[in-house]
Image (cartoon, rainbow over all chains, first blue to last red; front, side, top):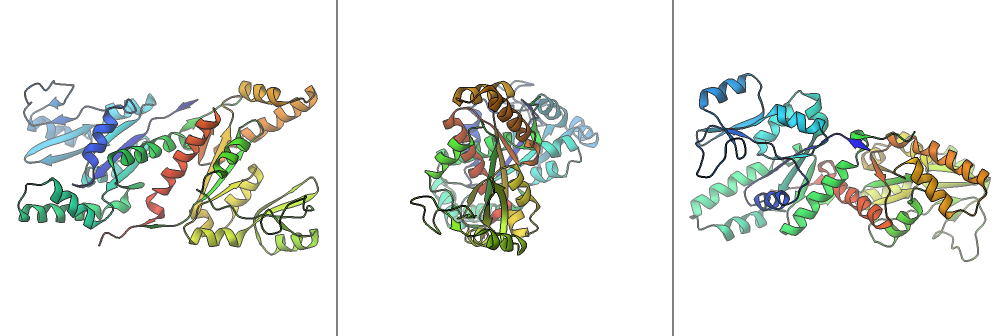
Amino acid sequence: MQRSGILFIISGASGSGKTTLCANLRKNPDFFYSVSCTTRAPRRGEVEGKDYFFVDHDVFRRQIKEGYFLEYAEVHGNYYGTPLQPVKDALVKGLDLLLDIDVQGAQQVRNNPDPQIQRALVEIFLTPPNLAELEKRLRRRATDDEATIQRRLAAARQEMSFWRNYDYVILSSTAEEDFQRFRSIMLAERFRTSRLQLDFE
Amino acid sequence: MQRSGILFIISGASGSGKTTLCANLRKNPDFFYSVSCTTRAPRRGEVEGKDYFFVDHDVFRRQIKEGYFLEYAEVHGNYYGTPLQPVKDALVKGLDLLLDIDVQGAQQVRNNPDPQIQRALVEIFLTPPNLAELEKRLRRRATDDEATIQRRLAAARQEMSFWRNYDYVILSSTAEEDFQRFRSIMLAERFRTSRLQLDFE
């Protein structure tokens, strides 16, 4: 049996448990992780081509124009982007990828006209089960003042409103439950007829 | 969170492990099982309305004409059919159903024009991973003569050619593996955005 690779993207607001889930997924060899480009300076110990490809602003802006990125974002004055070609190469080899991106990045991937990308794409949204739980989580972790908490709550609430754009929604629970739910989706998608090449002759 | 029910149908040729898988799934309370109609005579201990609804040929044929069945089949001169309305009622309540039917029955469900059925439908095909394994399984179980084995092989081979019509294909392995794979698909489908009603306000 042969199958084509799957491009999983996961988004989730602050308090969704996404950071923990992605860390747990990284411990397992289920996914190929592509290396992002960034314009920010390397931190101590970061390795070019392993942690990031470090490029300057001019190069990054030219690459944007050339359609080099599957998705990119500007955060605190620096660019971060996922190069398209390595993703396409991995998919052809039957490798699955996991991209951890926000709702704007997900929208860019969703809008990408490449049919190979669209065929491979599976979008998962992780969210606290309700607003009360969101608030509880943000208050539990934070040493922040009330204004900061309120700002984060508003931002998370806004992100949560995008759930309908995704293929799957996981209402986050414990770290272990979130992990098992994600894995169910991953396994199921591997059994999709549209991705399989079977030959019983 | 509320969600609409899912209508899982599973098909699999002789030697696919489907009988064992369905027996194992029955031990778990994941599904609502609808009661079929049949024209065959009740066997000792079978209870009307529990094991089957027992009806005569004339009634069954009239029901076919009236669109009473989601799918039906004639086997060895008797009719067997799944009434449509109880399936629709269960789906509205958010219950998931499992129908174990052959490729012809699956085709009838696939062709049903009811939008509620189409939205709810998830089709899974269980198959031996290859023809050598199929033959091994048929020979292992059988006290049959060579002609019978050859007839079964040909029939199974023909059924296996329908895999592309389904949403998911499980290449059967051990009973435990098959069970876990089916459950991954079941869980993943429950997280499908299109089936959820979430309200974060």
